[in-house]
Length: 234
Image (cartoon, rainbow, N blue to C red; front, side, top):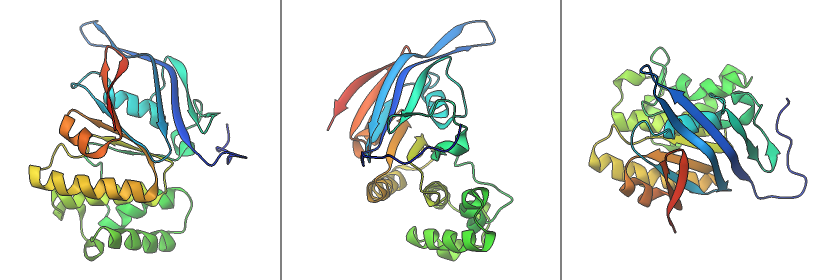
């Protein structure tokens, strides 16, 4: 399939999951239900939190949305168009992993520029845009540094800059603050919320922390036995 075509009428974008099912078989033969005819809708610019214990399927759900895993059944829609068969790079979604997944062999600038280069933008231009993005996060002075020399909070900002520079339609966050101390979590939560709202990006936040969900999200669900149960909505 080709790229997602632009909407003809509606200016409101929406991510929708319909009847998504996914199971996982452990080494002992036990079958876990990660998603059981699961439905979810995320409006334009909305932040939705998904809570639940480790192993309940939260991360797998993000990978299904990103196109990294295939559901056994069900469909995904973006702005009412079926994207179920689109490759990950054609969906234009950004998945930010729990461990940041920064490339240790690339410096900060090239980590941020990587997605643009993959999209075919010339390296010189991609690097220039990367520095501009790093300036917005107060990291421009580190642009030639190794990511291994950065603090956890600085690595977090680099990962977010890399996710945002490609102007994703949807931002998928997998436990983005779990490795940080309390004070740094508080400041970065506010920074994330401000940045996401400024860009009006539909966002799904996977977390096990109710306080984190409350601080960032417009609504929160619990994933249990393959189903999403609404916990609260602001």
